[in-house]
Every structure is written in structure tokens, then in C-alpha cells.
Length: 345
Ligand code: AHG
Ligand code: MN
Ligand code: MN
Image (cartoon, rainbow, N blue to C red):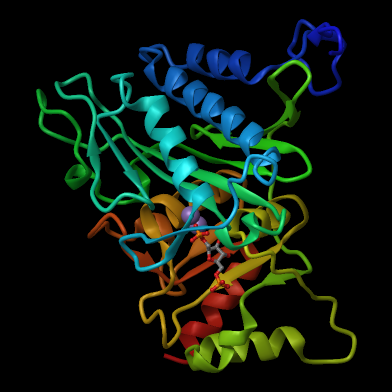
């Protein structure tokens, strides 16, 4: 086993004192800028990072530990679940079940919200997609965990419940943990977007992408083009616009994991689309734990996320597994997509 390294010699963005900027330090320094913060959100985010480390470790060993393949069951949305979906969900539940940090936990893999803490101090509703990109999991592809932390308006004295959440604007934090060649932790608490990379040797997330800014436009677009003929005319017309002309500068990138495609747009510019289609008349992606958290991240980085007709963050919550059409990434690209939808309505 390698000897532990001094984190102050690790590469990555540093604090004002020249020391390495770990995720814990970053979260605590942001907390200090909020005089009324009680520290619970900080612990919650660190607990998510802890779950991410466990999952990252398990994913690297999933073929060796026989954790690949389907369970044989289906989730509430009728999708076949993978062993790793269940493991990811269990890891998140385990991280929060006894913590009293969240009032309720909503997950793609659970039919109903899990009520965890009660009383007026139980302020947060945590919504997660434990394993985004399930179809990549058996082929050693990129997968991710998405999280949105909601602090809904509610009656004083009551624990927060999912019913109190009005829209994605009730989020106080959001982000994702992406398990690729390296493990990234990208988060916002409303003061910009910050990206960390897990240094496996020392078990710490270190700041590698401070104050991320999504380029206003960019060359990449990603969508499941097998569905194009089932899209609305406006969305079809938009794809024709992207692929027309001999000197076009656009390149298709579609990974099977929404987070990986959005991460590319965040860094290099572009757009990800999952419009409504015949099989998914209201869209495929889920508002509470996929679209709204990524929308919060993108807006904080200067990007945008739209249903085609409205900002994702303004879409009223109706149910926990509610789906919406989704177009997200660079601000200008999303605006052009919206124009195509508007003109064809
Ligand atoms: P999940 O694995 O959590 O069910 O999400 C999969 C999502 C998204 O990440 C991905 O871009 C899209 O669904 C893929 O859907 P298609 O296979 O229909 O293209
Ligand atoms: Mn997903
Ligand atoms: Mn999932």
C-alpha cells in the first residue's frame, strides 16, 4: 500500500493560504459566508460525498464482486432495475436513514418518499437519482448520482414534506457525482458551481474546477436520435437545423448518461435534449431528481435548462416521479431550441 501523501502537495486549486482546497473545507468556507447557516446543509453535502466514495469504490469492483446485471425486478416507473441501481439506492438510504439531516428522501428507485426525520428542524427534502445511466453500468461506461436538496416553504413546527416543494426554485443545493475515469463531485449552493475530483489515494475530493462557467454556445449536441420521428415538429426541425449545411460545426455526442452529456456541455458548450416522444408523451426524464438539480447547476454556471416552453426550475411540482421534456446546456443553444418549439406550436 502506498504511503499516505501530504494533501498540501496534491495538485488542484488552493485556498487563499495556499493549502489544498478539499471539498469539506470548501463547503465549510461557503457556510461561513451565510451567517444564519446552522451547518446542517454542510453535513448533508458531506454525507452525499461519503456515499459517493462508497459507490465509486463499489463501481470499480462491480464486475469482480458480481454486482452487474439486472435484479429481475422493475421500479415504480416500469424500468428493469439493475443490481447497481439497488446498491446505489441502499447506499444513499444508509447514509441518511439515521442522520436526522433530511425530513424526507425521494429516490428514483423508491415508489414513495421515505420520511426520515420529523419536527421543525427537519428542513430538507433530498431527491436523488442514485444511478443515472443504468444502461452504461454493465459495459463499464460512465454513470452518476444526481442530487437536489430542497428547502420548501412550510408551516412552522412541521417537518418538511415533499408536498411542500413548489418547484426546482426551492433547491438550496444540487449537483452530481460522476463516476468516469475519475470520480467528480460537482455542486452548487447558489454561489456558483464548483467541481472536485476524488483523489483515491487519500480519499478526498479536491477542487479541480473552481467557479465553472458554461460557455454560452458550443458545438456538441446529444439526443437519442432513434426517436426523432416521434418528436414534435419543432424538435425535429431543430435537429434538421443542426445537421444542415456542409460547413456545420456541430458534433453529436450521446453517452447514455444524462450527467455525462451535461458535464460535457458545462465544460465545452453544447446542448442535451430529451423531448417528448410517442413512448414518453410528457418527456422521459424526471423533474425532481434529474432535471431540476441539473437545471440549478446549469443556471448557476450561466447555462440554461428548459422544457421547451418554460424554465425547468419554474415548472410546478405535481408528483415525485413526474417527467418533463428537457433541453439543457449552453444558454444560446437552449434559446435557439426554444425558438424552434415556439414557432411550430
Ligand atoms: P436512468 O439510468 O437513471 O434511468 O436515466 C437514464 C436517462 C439518462 O441518463 C439518459 O440520457 C437517458 O435516460 C437514456 O435514455 P434512452 O436510452 O431512451 O436514450
Ligand atoms: Mn437518470
Ligand atoms: Mn437512475
